Length: 112
Length: 110
Image 1 (cartoon, one colour):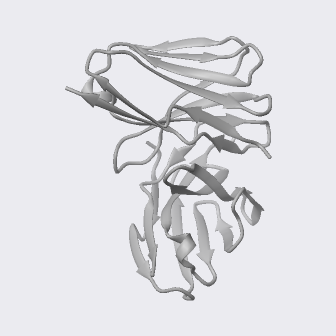
Image 2 (cartoon, chains in turn yellow, blue; image 1 turned 120 degrees about the vertical axis):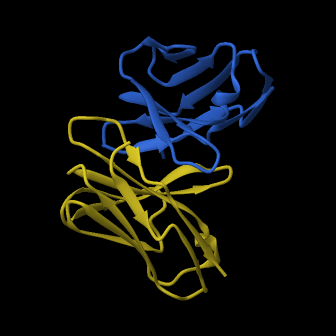
């Protein structure tokens, strides 16, 4: 697998608090993605990036924002966490010439 | 919007039996990918199919892409306990985004 890491791996937070998840890749991949995975829904795209400072919304972007100031880092922010955002969050990246997405290990987020 | 449906949601098989999961898209796809996620793990890319009618094999796994590029299947022959996990299809429509199916969770009973 490509060198893609996520931090933190686990987080418990309270409703209304801001949360930032970090994705870091060492493959110089152009594209990066944030997904959430929930039972019965598979993987749903939250936001994606097609270059530094170039991002766009995915299927379930409400309540989330992202930033990409460097090729290797893609941050996902929950401005004010809600219980419906309890989920497993996966980051993925891919190079420009390949369709293969490489996934990070995931972050388990619990919003109480 | 774009939807990719996948069935069945769950499948329990005896070791040695075959397994098939099916994927259907509401729109024509530019390509379809398959991923496997082991329990507690992350999705791992298996294969990409691009051409209409494509059939590709990886050892005991056979992947097909329909003529209309709207459906796909993954067939595993003679399942083994190492095949346990959730299999996802993911369709791409050409906008660099993948739409994942809901996955089929395979349990293999020894």
